[in-house]
Amino acid sequence: MKNIPQLFEYVKCKIDFVNFLEVYIGCTIKKMGGNGFSCKCPFSDHKDSKASFNVSYKEEDGVWLYNCFGCNSGGTIIDFCKKYYGLETSMESLELLANKYNLDEEKTLNFKPRKRTNWKKKLELAHILTASQCRKLLEKDYNKHSVWIADYYRQLNKALESNDIQSVENIGFKALKRMKNV
Ligand SMILES: [Zn+2]
Image (cartoon, rainbow, N blue to C red; front, side, top):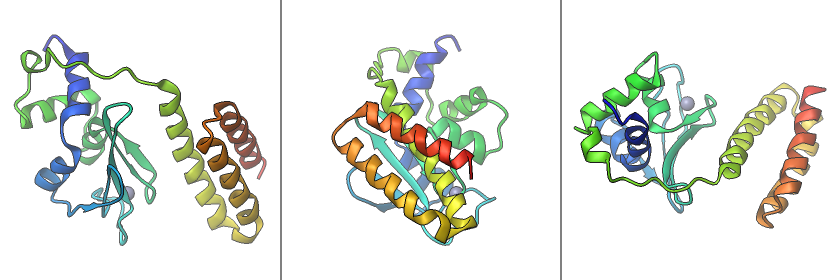
C-alpha cells in the first residue's frame, strides 16, 4: 500500500462507525440527540450494565469518534479496532478495516478530508481527560469534591457556550492544578 495517510483518513471519516458496530461487533445501538449514538460497551474488559459507550459523527471535523466513560477509552474506528481485536499497531487496524470494506488506495484517492480545527480536538480530549479525573475524585470522596467540581463544570460550560477559548484553557489549567494537589 502506497498512499497510507489517505487511506487512514478515508477509513476514519467514511466508514459508518455505527453500521460497523452493528454488523461486525453485534452491538445494539440507540440513537441519541444530534449525531450521537450509544450502546453497551463492547470491550471484554468492561462489564457495562448501562449504555456508557458513545459514538458520534463530528460534523466540523468530518470524522467518527467514540468514547466510553465507563472504561475511559476513546478515539477513532482505528483506535477502536486496535483495542477490540488486541492489535499491536494502527497499521494492523487499518489493514483489517481495509479488508473488511474492500478498500485500497485507488478507491480512496479522490477523497478530500476536511481541514481540522485542532483546538477543538484538543479541547475534546482535555474534556474527556478531566471528566475521568473528576469521576475518580468523586468516587474517592464525594463530599469533599462535589462542590468545586460542579462549579468547575458551570464555569467551563459558560466559557464553551460563549466560545471563549482563552477562558476555557484557563479554567482547564486551574482544574488540573487543583486535581494534582488533591
Ligand atoms: Zn467501556
